[in-house]
Length: 184
Image (tube, rainbow, N blue to C red; front, side, top):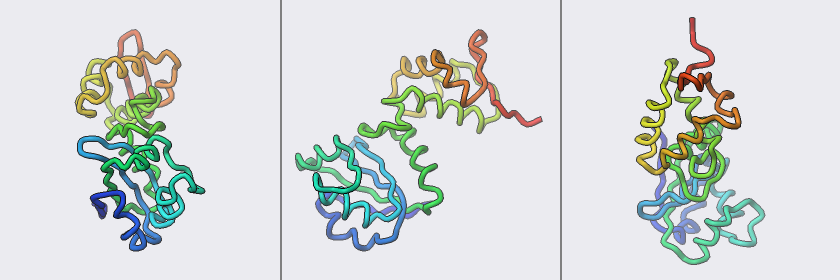
């Protein structure tokens, strides 16, 4: 679907980043078994030359937790996923909400109840069917491979701040989620 460029060690990025001039997409920092950060770039070369490769002198935003790991010399690898510019934002939200990277905030169910609610709404709207809270809780637990506790999912379904209602219809008495725009 998308072209993937893998770099085994972060230190090797400086040797190959010029090849990605003008290329857009997502970059993923990871170690064995952990996805640490997912970012987007309109141009990978520009993002890394003016950002991560400059370290603390960078003019661009760099995730603080990720910068600390780079400075400690941890064995980070980078994956560049080539994506057309017009699809980057949507794909970033989708991948972060699925992969649950440790250092991303927005869209990340580890840090954001609203991120969970947004995904619940997307699932309900895309399926165009009603879901019980129990079905959704089980679906999301398996969707995230157990990375997100059911307690967090239950908090999102409780809808105390009424944000879930922004993303899909809710009936808290019957514990039902339903599409807002169900076709006739």
